[in-house]
Amino acid sequence: AQRVTQPEKLLSVFKGAPVELKCNYSYSGSPELFWYVQYSRQRLQLLLRHISRESIKGFTADLNKGETSFHLKKPFAQEEDSAMYYCALLNAGGTSYGKLTFGQGTILTVHP
Amino acid sequence: ETGVTQSPTHLIKTRGQQVTLRCSSQSGHNTVSWYQQALGQGPQFIFQYYREEENGRGNFPPRFSGLQFPNYSSELNVNALELDDSALYLCASSLTGRARMNTEAFFGQGTRLTVV
Image (cartoon, rainbow over all chains, first blue to last red; front, side, top):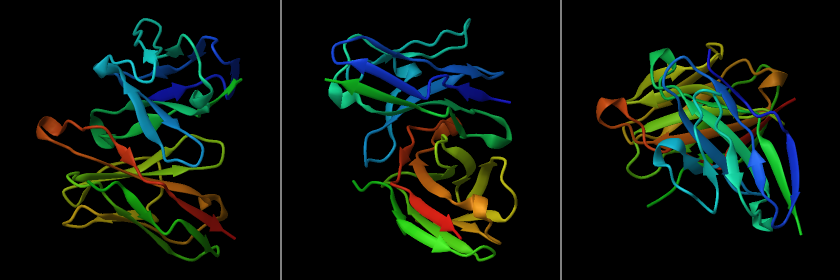
């Protein structure tokens, strides 16, 4: 069964500090992974997906198949980065095709 | 281009009742997925609809059912409500193209269901 684990429920950093939100997954096929973000009083929105290999709002995430990880990183955190972050894995086959499996989420707080 | 909209935004029901939640997909999208998000948890996949048929289902009992209409909007129905059904219900729309490849999923703002 596929699973996504985000070991930290809460993460606090100061503005300008580097930040890393951890995500580990288990999946028998070739994984397609995403980071979603939810800012206060806003809907869940896609931050980035690994196949795009983009940097969005200064965030990057590299898929490490050996460690089954997809950690989200930003070298210099900003106060506006404070939000809930979810790592998610797409099921691309079988009876649950199209299913996104989410981790429990990490609340990031960036202090001034 | 319109985004994903859900109605109602909040709802209170009594245990044993039935509820219908509605979702209008984003313009140009043909696939709708439903998720349940309990307090403090990540969203959990309920099912997905594509071409008006269920296209995948998570670990939810049959009293959770759905529909997709020709305009790609969707309903989630829950019968015999239980207290544990209290949660935020999210709808997400996407475009399924050739070779069943999905585009990015766009989420609605959710319906907060409280069962008392």
